[in-house]
Image (cartoon, rainbow, N blue to C red; front, side):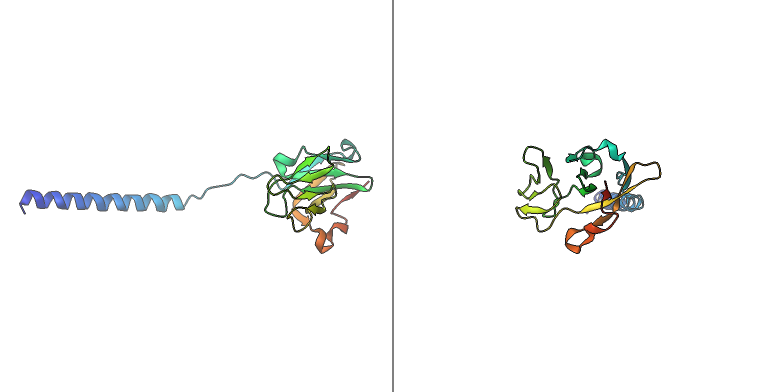
Length: 160
């Protein structure tokens, strides 16, 4: 091997080594600055109780917060808009008076109780209380499950 050939092989080796070290340094630097997810607030005001008509399901907060607000004769409650089967977002079908999951066909009554499809349990409720200014405050950090008997909790619904 000639001197010129030896130096070119050494040059290629050092260039490859420097590139690998540079890639490692970039990866290490990127690791120090993790991705940040910007999620919607976990607590939000939904308006005044008079804004919700008796016997209706309000879809206004489905896209932004993942919540259905339901008003019945007994009171108001906030249902988590996540199917208990595989986590899809159910739709409210006004004509059929039910929530229907588009993924696997689970059906839920207006109350959130499951009655058809593969969903193993009812939809969950979020904490719902009145704020100091009289508006409905929905807190997504606390949920109530029907099968645990938590729907009777005072914070699982607002009395009318």
